[in-house]
Length: 558
Image (cartoon, rainbow, N blue to C red; front, side, top):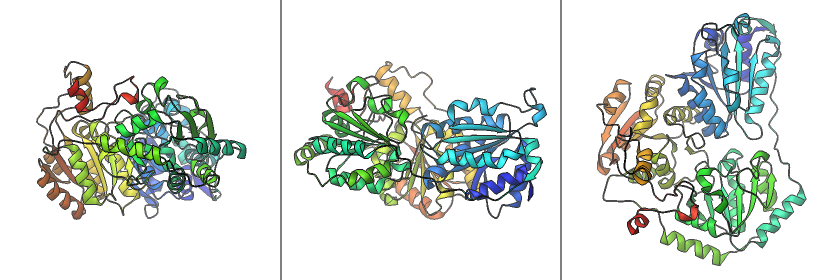
């Protein structure tokens, strides 16, 4: 049958099972939006307040559902406004297809109104990028984009289409996408060697990251932990990969990880690294990281092997598949002395904060208690992000959504809107510092206009908290451009954007406001006012070994 390019775009989205897209229209993409209007009973379009919000929403949708997120934007500034969101998805391995439209083919390269080489701009931050200049390759290009986005190590793909292609016609044939296969490059001999390393270890430690969530490996991971009877820590991106109530769990590792995890990894003789990339925020001083241990690294991306930390042995492939095959090679073990040592560290170095004050850790614990630990938590970036990782108990994958690799301030609210759209059955709460919230708070208008009942919790300390913490510790308390004292009233802003809003200054007010927000079915904002000098501990100084993690009690001794 003969279809226009615009209708081919929509038909291809339907082929891929897309039921929701996030975007903002403009001149060059009007043909696509015109077709989208005709299919509004099959594809929901969420009109965001800004294209960056659309990219973050598609990202949050993908992380919450495990499906590929889709965002749309017009040419020029519409396309460039997606860039930060695309880069965020790239750093955190999120499957996303960004569809933009460009000026007519004869006008490309002539500095035409709202023309930009978005494929060139995004080349370093996408798995692949296309510019479609011929309608006859349009359908196959979109199909390849989805395949690339979700296969192997997932990531964003850009498809830029010239406007005349969306208006032209050609034959279209329906297509049923194949189910993605499971990639596993390791041999039986390599698996056997890994199993022997695990059996020989006296003090093994599991270090798990976002790859475990992406591959759906939580079930096999739980079996692996039980079989090996060894401690397990997670990265920021790995929150929820293991039920954090498990007695083997020791907390997050890294710059703001627990002392138990940091000290334990520093003492182990085998570090089993699962779906991780040895980020600098985890490793600290790479030359001293897990210096007593052999490293067994399992990841789907061969480029990550030996990139930051040398591995004694590695397995490349889908983590769920590899763990399933490893589990058949391992009989149940016991590491009683090692686990006893780890439990002593837990008892000696618990996470702690001042319970006499109204603090973010207390807020997070209250949210966890009142949601039964069942909410999807999204965050922005900074102190509140670390507290959300430390003090909420994550029991399931895809319930903690944050910008880990790029550290994108302003990410969380858009991501929350996407997560709630994809998982309407879940309570979705975004936790943001006031510095982050003001970057993309216009997306509250999206939530109210579209009836998306997310809860926004602002950790309002009138400063850029994490930067101020560094200024306090390393810059002689010179608070250069980090104090946000002004006349912005977030409650009035939220109400002006169509949301219910509460100012919260104590634990009693928090309970009341959160109870109302959880039950009202409307987008709500809780402006929680805390002290500006609260700090996130433990902490590892930049360039130091994670074995040198310190907290306030250590500072007091100096």
